[in-house]
Length: 70
Image (tube, rainbow, N blue to C red; front, side):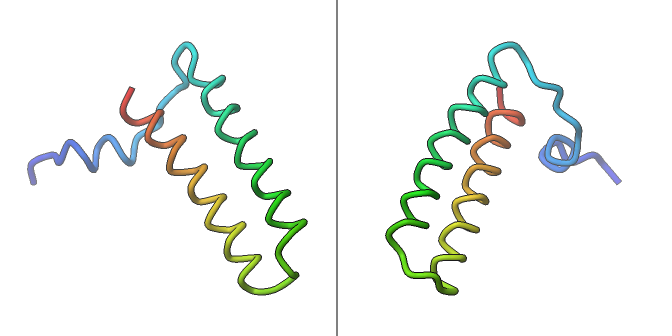
């Protein structure tokens, strides 16, 4: 089986490079700010929980984009 470069990249450990931790932190900080806004304004519900879960996923994928592609 010949190696698939996308699979190899996506399933490999990516040690943080210079400057990346600051980017991760900036994304997390802004997402946390939005999560608090959602928690304050949206009624406690499945929809609110899902919105926060999807925000968590967004942070994950944004950070993965940095880790995998820089």
